[in-house]
Image (cartoon, rainbow, N blue to C red; front, top):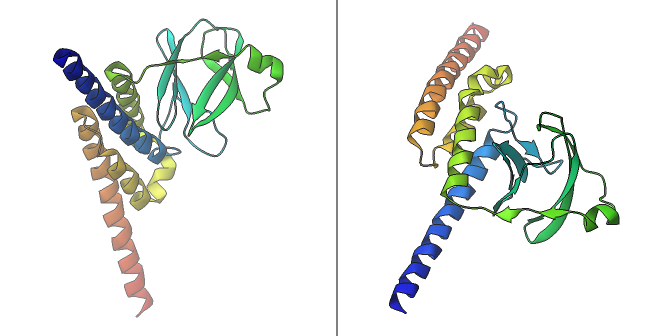
Length: 203
């Protein structure tokens, strides 16, 4: 009985830790929206979350509180998935290219027929899925300086990078340091230019 109780407490603590990490990953993912090259696809029109990501032979679905997955067997097909976000059930129909990549996510009203045939993804909030999401965030982070629009607002970009610092990952931290140094230099240059401009304007 005591062994079962300890195992249960360990599982609860592990799940709580994974949920905390997921919240940090979601915050970073949303901060990098529009500032990086992403392989994810939005499942909402107006928000970066929830989203889907294909990795290997699985399709992952990430909401604000969960990670779930399906075996990927839909190349060249369309499928409707049943998901839940903030306690509300919703459906998305996804079309896949012949190579298995996502071609389109439909935001149209799901028909009753499609809902009846919808598949439910299996919960998979575990260390492996967290590691996968961190790997994707690292790839996104490394692309930040390649996004030209970020140079016009280095302060906002630095704010986004700092949001990502709460994630525990040595590789991600190193990338953030590298990106931050670049934008801090741009910010100082921008401030110096403004100072010189203001100074010349008062002559």
